[in-house]
Length: 137
Image (cartoon, rainbow, N blue to C red):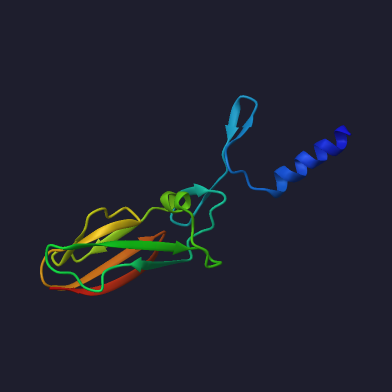
């Protein structure tokens, strides 16, 4: 009976990724992997394969703002979880003389029209980028 229980525990621990740190005696083991960009992410996170800006305004007026959102996907096309994204980091860039981003390191932020022209937004996650353009009037 003890052999079956031990085998079951070993089998389960080898076939299911840990969702929380695993206590082992007086130490805690946390599995991590280093991605190509040098950042450390939880081992259950697949690397970013592509990035898509999914929420952005079709147009803005000077002084107004709108929501923006970038969605990284893994190599299977699945949307990555927030903890995986936070570990990878994000960076919004814009032509700041036309538009500005309120929280340039957040995945969900706001863009504000500064002056008339064409706003160009770029979001980059783990070396993968997507860009959009829209008018500010």
